[in-house]
Amino acid sequence: MALKFRGVDFIQFDGLLSDEELLVRDTSRKFIEDNLIPIIEECNRAGRFPRELVKPMADLGFFGASLKGYGCAGMSNVEYGLVMQEMERGDSGVRSFVSVQSALVMYPIHEFGSEEQKQTWLPALQSGEKLGCFGLTEPDYGSNPGGMRTRARKVGKEYVISGEKMWITSGSIADVAIIWAKVDDEDDKIRGFLVETDRPGFRAEDIHGKWSLRASVTSSLSLQDVRIPESNLMPGTGGLKSPLKCLNQARYGIAWGALGAAMACYDCALQYSLFRKQFHDEPIASRQLVQEKLAWMISEITKGQLLVLQVGRLKDAGKVDHPHISMAKRNNVWMALESARMSRDILGANGVADEYPIMRHMMNLESVKTYEGTHDIHTLIIGQAVTGIDAF
Ligand code: TGC
Ligand code: FAD
Image (cartoon, rainbow, N blue to C red):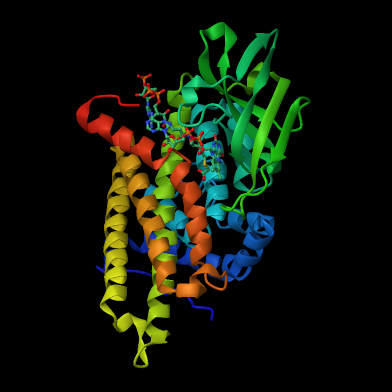
């Protein structure tokens, strides 16, 4: 039985949002309800990215939504977060696509790019005419990207880049890849390059057999002596700090997004528990053990909402620090995964079928817990912030 999402608001959270924020949230929710929900289970089964949604999402200003100028919507960080919440209420893979396009491709160009790079790429990425990917992770360097082996060397007026990147969202559908590499003549400083994916020596191959984020494209990238003009170096990049600043943007969006996945699971489980009857012809919602699960979920979702809203307000005021974002990502993804697991229990056998969205969310959230810094890496980032001691 198809259950329609009803929204989740236990403590009048909406009262903390402005009219503009509520409008953005409701517009995004309607878009997802009308366009993604009807097709997502088919996409998930087929392992298909719903590319037909790119243009309509662009038209609603979802790409680079919190950036200013170059055709971007200029939303506040809280508004952007609410878009991410609704996206991931639909599917983490589709939210991933939007996160990468916005936070990991458009943001670095906006933050570190030359004016020419901004003019060339930002309007095209905003309109969805061009797609991008972000290559930081390598086969041997995931949590520790500072060890990367990808190298760039200057030859005349060109850079020549060689290396391998792994687990790259949107890799094979991207027109441009943001590639992070150590530069030979600059003491191995990590810098960011714009690499058009049709350049000779660039190859993207999809990773198949994923049980998670099946509606998102994930690829490995191989760069073998790829030559790019020196003007493709993003001049504002310098050191590991540059890609980490991009990750802050994406992790912030994920913290909101995970909330959306948790809401989808909780609301589905709540509705199901009220009509599913076992023993004495009574709904399973009337049993204390089921209520305990529902009470846990609504409490944790509510705490997650307040956490990410405060982080968003700090970000809008220019006062956020990256450990704040780590706490929001770590807590909300963990909470969402636990909620998905509890919701699946409440649905019994129906919990494993894709007639309901729960198992898909659960499988997706396994990736979300790993990417953009694993749960444990964020534990260590918070630990470092409170103790001053690096335990990596
Ligand atoms: P460390 O020495 O600690 O840091 C180097 C410099 O960077 C500064 N810094 C940050 N700056 C801004 N934002 C942050 N989040 C920062 N974290 C650290 C730091 O202060 C230092 O500055 P300075 O001035 O002293 O040079 O670097 P480390 O090598 O010890 O590594 C730190 C660590 C482990 C936290 C970091 O490398 C890390 O976050 N690892 C996790 C890797 C990761 O998250 N990868 C994500 C890849 S992209 C992805 O997964 C996309 S998924 C698709 C989707 O988003 O949907
Ligand atoms: P590892 O770093 O090998 O970690 C394995 C385990 O060891 C983890 O549990 C980790 O927490 C633990 N560990 C590692 N170091 C420590 C330590 N010091 N102390 C304690 N425990 C530790 N990357 C990109 O660059 N771009 C993308 O678009 C992108 N998209 C992705 C999409 C998907 C679907 C997935 C699954 C990943 C994606 N990634 C992407 C890669 C992602 O960021 C990495 O998987 C992640 O950073 C973890 O790296 P790893 O998988 O190599 O795990």
